[in-house]
Image (cartoon, rainbow, N blue to C red; front, side):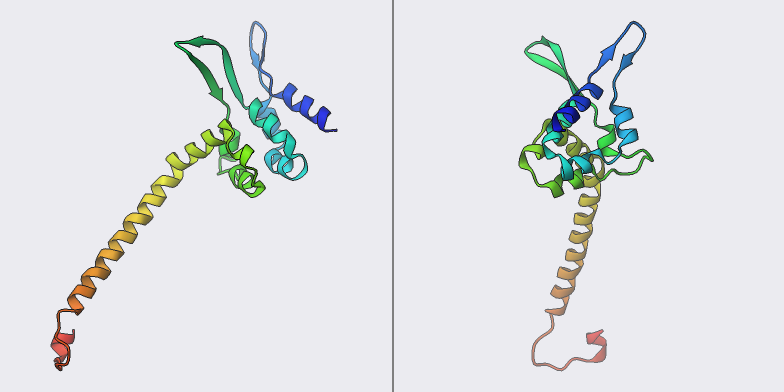
Length: 157
């Protein structure tokens, strides 16, 4: 069963062309099965590598010792409604280090970090530093009174 599933995934994710148009089944695969990553993590984890390999295209030509690579990660980042897709969460829950270091997973996790998550992270750290500054200033003001002396209400306020 895994061999036929592997053959179907390879066939769907093979780029074909004729004179007029290119054919690539990535959109159809994720339209029909938006939770394909979750299903493969649960039922057939050996097919994850095949699926992720099918989501990238490597040119057969090299130029200055470099090869062009196209990654098709749109459906890994967002679902059909345009919302955030839980694919990265499913891959992390699967906890397979070989899958996590696949170049497709690295690329789409970097895109998510640099374009979405890093902004919120930096804002939360700036807020933390602001609150820390207010706390340190407040503590230094409180420590300026002398111990043992009674203070008036005006000094306490």
